[in-house]
Image 1 (cartoon, rainbow, N blue to C red):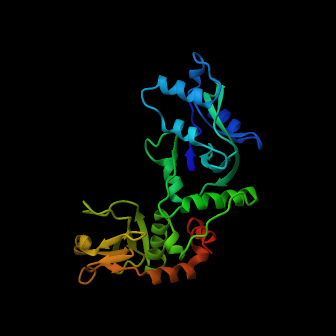
Image 2 (cartoon, one colour; image 1 turned 90 degrees about the vertical axis):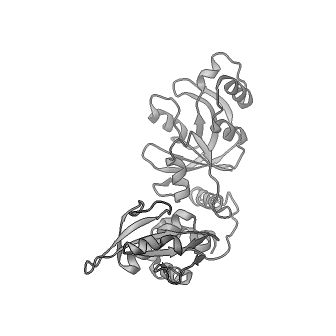
Image 3 (cartoon, rainbow, N blue to C red; image 1 turned 135 degrees about the horizontal axis):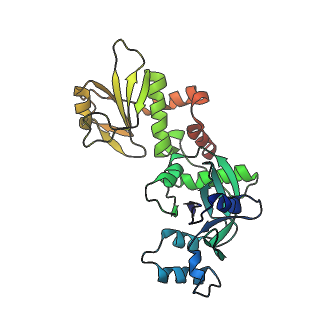
Length: 298
């Protein structure tokens, strides 16, 4: 299991909570709250803690089930107050632990290491999702790549081969998660086609089709506008859906394993071979969020 946990109980002083959880090597934890449940219940272990909370609340928080399922060597991502992401290896299952001041009701002992401010978009999104809750499993988009990445980062930070990684097959384009594939295509349009990104917003008159972002040309004579749509895996794009953008004088870039109805649409397909060549020739200036995936399949 790979999951993310917010270190965010009802503790008044979160500095104290984060320091308790991550501050001392050898005594590190991910923790959840509901410490009040100890007042009127005999709690001996996580099972009795779980049952007590379950009886008391109207709706069971997913964090309680994630902690109940946790076992040794599961991996957790968490974040400190400076926004630094940490990778944590469970040293065992969840245990009952009461600290009212920090509002801790249960904890999992972990071995934790700071990773930095940049992590794959899929992991980052799990922390930033509205109403994402205290904890959630991080589900893979492409053949277990987030699991393999998490194991890779843990091995790297712990400086030991704690996990055996499955080597991923294919090229980097086969293995990039959706966020990073979009970032690579956007980098291509900026560096190769001569545009600036304006925003990660829907382009004008978009009502049914999601556009990754909008661009404006570096060359102002004449000024050109562009939009892009990216689909990874086996997904296809129908160029006919983008005719309205072409009519409004946008250059429309499309990247997918298959672009249907391209002929006569006025859209521009970014070919796989073109993007692979761009990656190889511009690797030195691409963000680490893209290039880091090479270690998983080369």
